Length: 86
Image (cartoon, rainbow, N blue to C red; front, side, top):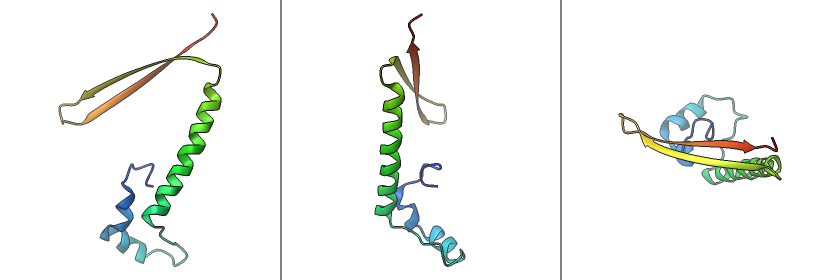
């Protein structure tokens, strides 16, 4: 939930989330902010290694662009082009 919804780690300390957890089955244990951070870091490191293996010996060109929408929301785009032997 933290990763998919891009929530801050301290989300679990919010009153609304705590109230929600009170009505959950008792077997549900809410982790601490530090534990969630560690879990996210582990996932990141695993996915980073997968990406490194997938890109090993590949020729790749990366391009980035950033812009701000009319609603003042910042965006960044990353484009990757694989360079093959052809």
